[in-house]
Length: 254
Image (cartoon, rainbow, N blue to C red; front, side, top):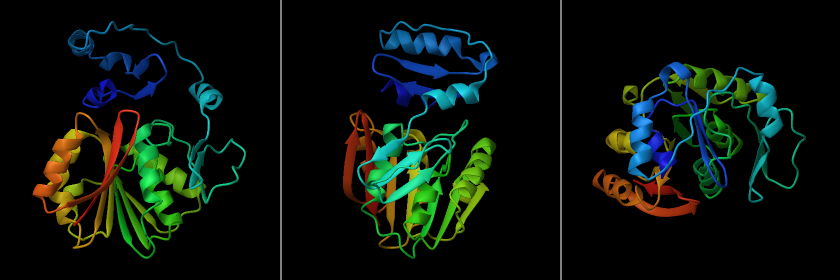
């Protein structure tokens, strides 16, 4: 729940561990008053630490482990050894972008994608982050993939990851969802509740009859009901869901 609430703030990343949650901010942009208020509302005691400069790439490599989603897909960095026993292997160097498979929402999206027939389909990846879902969509034989994000570092990171995975049918754009008029057979959006609710009319408009919408960034006890209601109001039929930890991924069809 806390991770979901923090998505409304301009943080640089969140790390969920067994007994605590670490949230990283640029020091000059740390919203101390808001964080203290949030902690008070949830009866939590935050510990604030100023982190000294260090070789973050080296730190990241030491702690970044591969992710395996059933026997369907493995996600690893370029410095890991290849992983056998899965249908698809993705190489993702995330840098500052979201989407490595470690967070439950990305894991759930990948898990649902195993059930979708994307062969020959046109796909939109809304909020592409590292490009992980776009890359998997191409491996699943999508005819074309449009990957969009409004963070320039995500665009650059996604382009680097497309090259690492030898992708040929993905276009990456720093562009807002509302600028599109063409339709997509399938749309992925792993963002957060507020963005999903605001974007639901546009997401529905961009789908043809029979098209699929796969969503995550949703806390299943807190957000699921309102997301389903919003989708239904836009003519989308709920198909199925999957859960991991406190999170859910929801599949709809128009």
